[in-house]
Length: 351
Image 1 (spheres, rainbow, N blue to C red):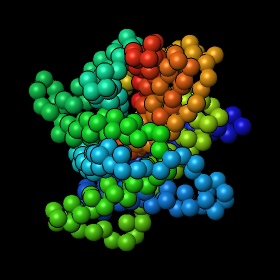
Image 2 (tube, one colour):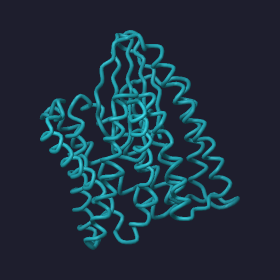
Image 3 (cartoon, one colour):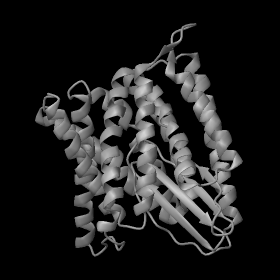
Image 4 (spheres, rainbow, N blue to C red):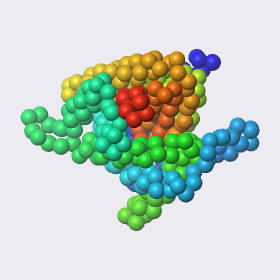
């Protein structure tokens, strides 16, 4: 069972990682906003069909449905999920896909700092170290040219997507006890529709049917199916181990970009990648260490989805909460050690 779960976690990482190089190829046949729209349509529609299939098999999602109370958070989530993929597609069109794969790690920084500022979550020393390393690596990838202070526009757009997803992650956490499948379907279909209408308003052409089908399929595979495989793996491996396996996603993205697109990054890229690898190791150690501290306590799990972001919340009042977010590229895992019902220790994993 654990071997199957491990394969599911690795497959989830690989399916997500292939998104960036393939999106770059498909952007030759679709506008950036149209591309974002149909990617999200693919994820939303695909998981809607998946949910119906599970109902027919008697394995329907038993989690609570969204209600009017969650409407403000749901609207904010959808709006941010319109902006983020558009910025990402625009970034992919303007910079190296290998750069994009690594820059997605900046989502850790934005998610963690927003949680600190808005929700008063305490960030562990290890996470602060990881944040500094990710920020330094991101800055290395954001400048271009030798000896000249020149911004890489594509990299800045990707960082903008990470900021949007950081806010979106914190909105999604507010509805984390609701049906994960329903949340992803709403994200995909509503955000996809919003992007589609915006694309029409700005005069983008609708892609030809074969390319629409290709983009829908990529959206389902890289967002929808990847998420489902991640959840399946987590049920048998636990959140920390699953995230550790999934953390290879950005580095697989780099490898796929080199294989499919012939990317040949420069020296600065490899320096940034070394920092990203180091930050990932630090975060995994932080997450696993905190989880081991409380392994004797009762655990229950809540799943919610934003692209590829997962959070673990551990509290010393004998509860462990696991949150999975889907939406933007990559995956995070955050552990909160609650000491007295008010304080949190926050660790994060982004892949």
